Image (tube, rainbow, N blue to C red):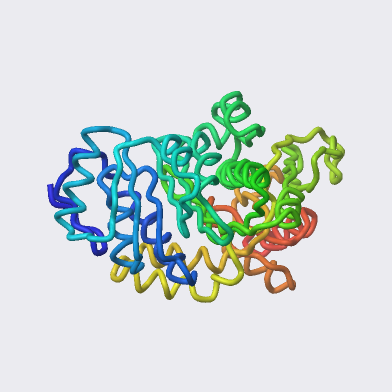
Length: 367
């Protein structure tokens, strides 16, 4: 095979490579370019080595360590490192857990976990080789678990109740981040979420570690619960270790409760202004990727979103354009925009009553 991506050319394809994960790799590089001081990296699940090779070449690393547990894939990794003339990369045929427990004094500025399935089994161990300000990037492809199709598996793996509805993808990312925040706190780290998103079959999160008990406690206090009323459409969140809401404050009905999960921001305010430009420099002519990150950088950092088709159905009204609704709410002084999680949904700081009033107004105009 001969697969070219960024500055890397993969000629040995005995290990698995996923071209659809290109956005994940491009976005990570775009984010890392905005972070000063990244000199070394650990690519903990390397496969062909495409991530580590690109990081070496495109981030100007002084050193990269690349791990691959599968013997055949490890041979592919070595071959691709050689063919790409990457002199500053070391590779080992070992597991993430074995390496991190054998090398606890090794510390990395950037750590990447991109496994098949859940990142949960690896996250505790990689914290052993992290330090203050380390950038930790991890991917989950167990989206059916995180989005609620297998509730018991989510409770078992992430110690959280998922949402099996249109909010599932954002809830899944927040569950994953909440799980990591609890682990990081055990090492006296808080988390600063730099970039997180859901795309196709995977979820991606990039966080920076903040050292100290105060930072750890501050992050843990951002964990809480999400609520949804299926009768009137109300959404709500509550930070804290316990849930205190049992009925919808809007209509009094029973509600669906999910959590605990991360209720802090999903994109760092410090990277928002420069993220799209950095992605353009990394992705180049890939307009689809650039447009995705550009819209992501503009997305309001408000927990959860309203499905416009579901609300109009609840209200027994004809469908309306989510773009028209977002514009109407914005004209009323609210924050409102389409979310990347679901294209027919909007994030807004307007109340459910204000949203419904806007829908009724638009419906009368259309009629």
